Structures are given as C-alpha cells and as structure tokens.
Length: 53
Image (tube, rainbow, N blue to C red):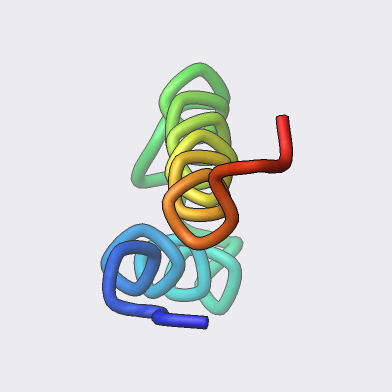
C-alpha cells in the first residue's frame, strides 16, 4: 500500500504523541486530524480496491 497520502498527517500525530506535556492542539483539532487520517485511508482503499464498498 502506498503511504504517501497518509504520511504528513501520520507524522504530525506521532509528533504530538511524543510530546504530550505540550498542548499544541485542542482536542477538537486532534479530532479533525484523526478524522482526516481515517478519511484519507478510506479514499485510498477505494482507489486501490474500487469494487469493495
């Protein structure tokens, strides 16, 4: 599977996890990042395997 689409968001989430004492983002912003990662993964899955709904 091609990781290029997810890499920027995944790297940002990993960076935030490594520095939990510094609140750089609100929980709402983190929610948006996670939803974006899930959405991009879903789109990527549909591109790779379009016959699966």
